[in-house]
Image (cartoon, rainbow, N blue to C red):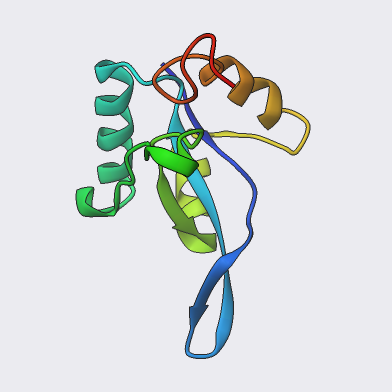
Length: 110
């Protein structure tokens, strides 16, 4: 299984009046093994398990389970082997991960 990381951007985080850039660290799929690998990877780079964000339901149901990272933690994740995604490579991956399963809408629903 692979662990992916997207690019830094503004997600609305503010610290002491400054905007903080952040990104997401997420697994290749929703399977228990993939999530365990994500948690193990996160622990190796110093992330707390309590920072994990499970896939939500409702209006944000298309999201994937992930950890939010700052620039410093992103650099550690890349050094530890996370696969960097770009604006070009992320959409096809997300389409594959969440089209009709645990990450997204149910089959036959819009």
